[in-house]
Length: 398
Image (cartoon, rainbow, N blue to C red):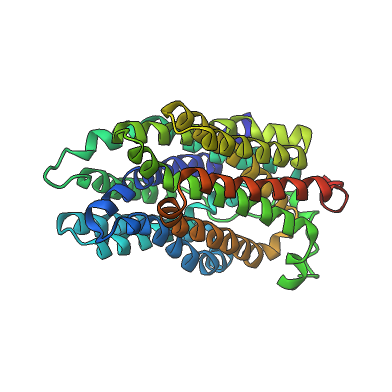
C-alpha cells in the first residue's frame, strides 16, 4: 500500500473520486426530493437521477475512445467541465422551478459520471495484474472521504439560500467541479506501461472486440459489475423516497445514505488485499452474499434500523462485487485493446444502471419496497450461482 500512496496518479484519482462521490451523494440525497417539488407527478421524482444515467451511457464509449487517443488527463478534464456545467444548469432550474432544465443538468452530471467511472480503470494502467485489485480499491476508497463530510455539508447548505431550497448544494457541486479540474491539471499524461504489464500484451495481435467479449472471463466480469452496480442503484435511488413514505424525515434519509456510502467505500481499504490473497471468485461470491442479506433485511421490516443495516450491507456487497468484477475485466484484454473493451464494458454497466434508476421510482410506486428487494434478491442468487459454476472456465488461472 505504501507504493500506492506514493503514486501521484493514484493520489489524484483518490482525491477526484472523493469530489465526484460528494457530488453524487448530494444528488442521491436530494435529486428525488427536488423532483417531488418540481415534477408534475410524484412518479417522475426519480427521473433526474435516471437521466443522469442516460448522460452516462451517451458519454461512456466515446470517452473511452477519446482517452485511448488523447490520454486519460484530457478525458478527465472533460468530466470536470461537465460537473461545472451540470451544476450551473441545476442552479438555474432550482431558481426558476424548471423540472426539465433540472433534468438537463442531470445529463451533464451523467457525462461527469462516465468520466469518474474510468478513475478506477486508470488506476490499473501501469500496474501488474496481481496488484490491480489493490489499486482499484485504493482509488475507490476516496469515496470514504466523501461519505464522511458530504451528507452533513449537504444538510448545512440545504436551506442556506432560502427560499431556494437545495440551491446551496448545487452551487457546491460547481465548486467540486472546479476542484476536480485543478487536480487534473497536475495529473501526468499516460506513461509507458510497467514491464510486468508489457509482458501481458501481444502488440502485433490485437483482437476484434467480438472475440474478446465472448470470453467467459469477460462475460462473468460484466455480470458481476453490472449486477452489483444495478442492484445498488435500484435500491439506493428508491431509499430516500421509501424512508419518507415510512414517516421518517429528510435528515434520516441523508444519514442512511451516508452509512450506505461508508459501506460502499470503507471496504476499499482491504477488499483489494482480500482479492490479492483469496482470489477474485471468493470476493465476488462474498459480495453476492452480502447484497442478498441486505435485500432480506429490507424485506423483513421497514423500521429505521433495517434501512440503516440493509443500506450499509448494500454498500459493502457492492464494493466486493464491483471491485471483483473490475479486476477480472482487466484480465480479459491487453493494454492496446483497452479503449474499445473498457468502453464497451462501461457502456454495458451504465446501461444496466440507468435502467435500474429509471425503474426505481416506478417500481417503488407500483410494487412497494419489499417487492423490489425481492426481485433484486432473485437476480443476486443467479449471479452467485454463475460464479460458483464457472470456477474452472473463469477463475482457475487467477
